[in-house]
Length: 179
Length: 179
DNA sequence: ATAAAATGTTGATCTGCACCAAGATTTTCT
DNA sequence: AGAAAATCTTGGTGCAGATCAACATTTTAT
Image (cartoon, rainbow over all chains, first blue to last red; front, side, top):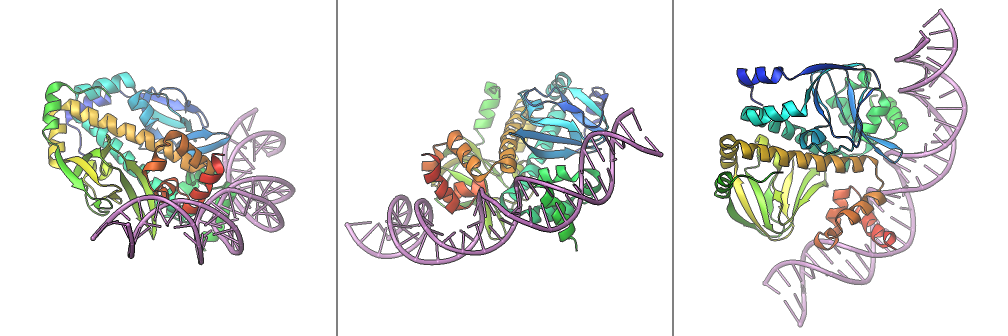
């Protein structure tokens, strides 16, 4: 994903504004239109849906990554997901108005956003494939190898939800698997 | 997704070339970089991955929709998926070279592609949520209500694979559920 | 520092659905 | 039209993993 020219970079940088969220604070509620694109300076966040009384965790965002409900933000349509701060979070955000202006004004930015979005799509397809074909243990192992650090970072019940398995099963795999 | 101006529309239209595929023909092989973006004039296609000896069906494309392995195409990276014609297919395609030139030359096209990609991401997130939280029967019902026509159009074993359930289970649900 | 809340562990059941297999039906090809 | 291939159906069986529950541990808040 090529770097942006200086001029674009400056225009972009000027649109970010700092925000903080407390632990457990809900950043965006399902049903609303996502107003902001976020960049995480510190903290961990969780994107999830409610299905009946169950939660389905779609993804986590971390220090150094973008955050927000991307589809709702870019399409300015109501989202079916919640965004929540798992830890106290220090973020930058940009309003849709600014975002839209920037993408219209600078084709390089428009392109950069497109490629970022495709990269997100690519990652989601990869996980989708795993959900379709892996057993609980296979999903668990994959998580361990791909991102072992999350074990210390994120409560296991959310990791279980992310894998689509029961928290109790997750705990059992934890003792079984690595021996 | 706003319409394109006339001039862009003409430039775009000039880049499409017709191709045909036979039933069961593999259009793109996993491991390769997707060279083309497709538009389906007639037929049904299936995008799937191989995981061990199991197939995971990610999505179907139909008459009137775009097709191809979108992430591999846009990022020009090797794909982990296969694209296959389920029925004899009549398609238009555009090379990556032309695609890239068009997006660089016309910001409206670049933007239009971005929004199309986000829409795809949005749909995939929706399905992802269902995979995480639905039982076999819930996924089956959802398929029936969302796209009942596919029952006549696509062999049930592929629909089962798309839902992540066993073909035998799909068949049993078919007799159980609608009564 | 201490109480309270949240999270994690572990064992005992129970069940949804994968798996297997054989026969029936439908679709495709020549 | 007829043979061959592909797909669908249906019953039986087994197990991975959900669910339940009680206790242990860790984390958060005051």
